[in-house]
Image 1 (tube, each protein chain N blue to C red):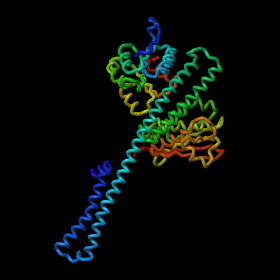
Image 2: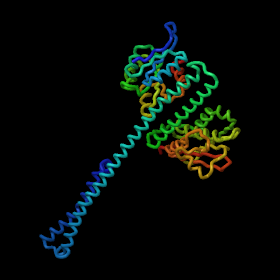
Image 3: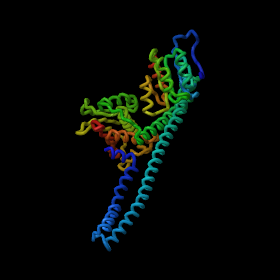
Image 4: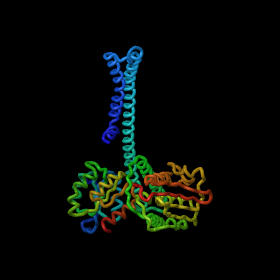
Length: 314
Length: 135
């Protein structure tokens, strides 16, 4: 085990061991030749002896050349790995810097526009307020974009640690529906829940799963017509749970069912959102060792489904 | 360095005081305006040393702290006012552009009451401040 560990951390050690073993072959041949010369063993005399000498020379030449080639290859691999590590570090620093540089000005803009819009700096009329509210909404969207990009970057680079605890998915769905009651009522959308077992619990990162549920619900709300319906289903399975979010919106064409999970892909022609939500959602579910996919029949709405194991650590 | 002290007159003792430790001066100005409108006194400093001395000297009801401030950073402030917080608990709200989970975890371990990422929603920030000062 110790050798195995050292080989992983020090590739030169593996290289030296391999060549030490290889070097035994020409020395064995050389030893044979010596024995034949001094003890007169017939089999090594004459033509066979000549062949063995040539073999020895080839073996020694191969050994020297091989040593150089393999050493160069290892050097190159180590150099590339090191460069990749430095690139990764630079990317992390870049994202952190961009994040910081964007987050501060966004905070300044949002607070100032809020102050203006709230009349803290002086009275404003309806039209001025309307313009400021548009600016505020736009800044909110930029903030979401920056947050989304960072979320995705952190997931893709393995910088996200899940805080796994035991939760009931039914409770998470309840929280989500309660938090969105106003939006749903405004659009006249009827939401229902079909929960097989409200006490059923799984081990997961609650905030992250709620983020996924929130994304699925907000998509469903966005693409469901007024007075439409959305259903959340919680189904117990042999190895975990299956959660479905179904709507009766206009559906997704079959050729887009997989594409919508790619970065910057939008579900429809609506300009809201930046097309990161589903990509982030799929990454979150995959971090939980689960699966997220979509099913749809055009014109008959769509269904987003994710399956989660009872405990992703097992 | 104290960049500005805003607040009421001598007679308005009931006003609660917020200490803002933040190096973005334009953000400080907008936060001062925001909290003044909510009826708070605001003291603002732009670096860690100023933050530590203000926290020790002034009677504050809440500290709003940025982690990425000059002269040691927000953690330096937290380390240096630990004794003060232990004897006289003051809620601390961290307002930061950092998204590192480690930073948040460390801040919470050091006694931070609330951790808010920039760019924040001003209404949520007001709600959090009111909750922390008990309004």
